[in-house]
Amino acid sequence: MTLRSSINHRSKEDIAGFARLTLEIVNANASITLDRIQKGYYVQTKDKEQKEAMKDCLASYNMIVNVHLKEALNAMNKGDYKIVKQRAYAAGIQAETCDNKFKNSTMKPLKDTNRYVQNLCAIAMSIINKLLLPNQPTSTY
Image 1 (cartoon, rainbow, N blue to C red):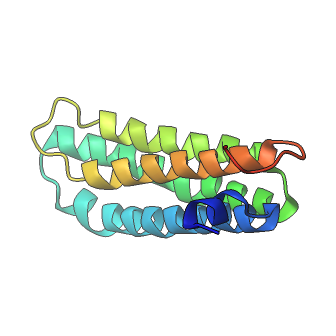
Image 2: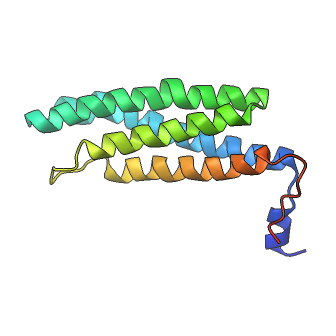
Image 3: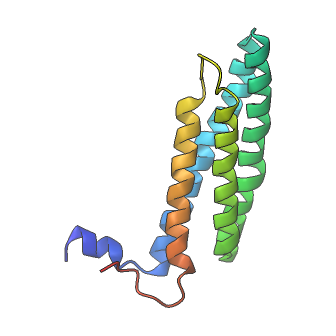
């Protein structure tokens, strides 16, 4: 058995574990970002436009951590993968919204973090798609 075939023939429990782990990683990263915005970036920012953008990002990351990812992880416990996918999508959109607040700015302090959250949410949704397929093998070939 090759690594590729091993990955593609995982049970639904294994796939759910991958999805949960991905969501937990996003949640940990987003929680750190929320803390940094609250205690660092927002407080230290002097520029009015940057401060307003940080305020919006604070709201976005509050939603990501305290609503979207919390609901996604709760839905994982219940096996409600449609809700998990919706919440992961919403978290990714919130990170994109934060990123867009700095569109016209030369300083983009959250660019990498926003991209990371967006990418991991996309990965989580991709994994969840495997769980939404009814009784189909997980192999792609």
